[in-house]
Length: 138
Image (cartoon, rainbow, N blue to C red):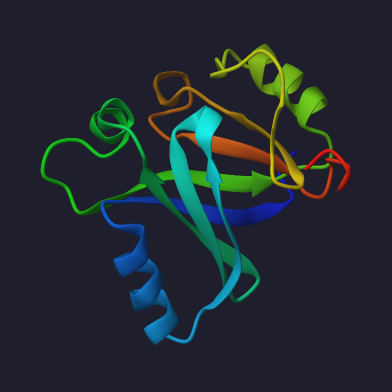
């Protein structure tokens, strides 16, 4: 069902500081963007075959929900690559796993869906179908 770990999502307090740190470790930026509909700024860095996604919430509500009080950073989710997000969504729902959305969500070039941790053993998985969104639509 899952092909490989695509990325680890880390919520950070300050995206610029976190980016500078990863770059000091020799990691290479893949892409960075603001995703206003999700109230975040993100940056993806290559790390071997996988990636690290830095996530900075952009509103006080999103910051409280995703980072919590006084935290500098925390691992939020594990992104796993799949061949077809809609079919995997149906498969995991058949196992009793709830998702945060009823339809796949395009972010950059990828289609995505997220599990609700309470229904997936406390772990939030992000299902990622890479390069599934037309470049014209991005």
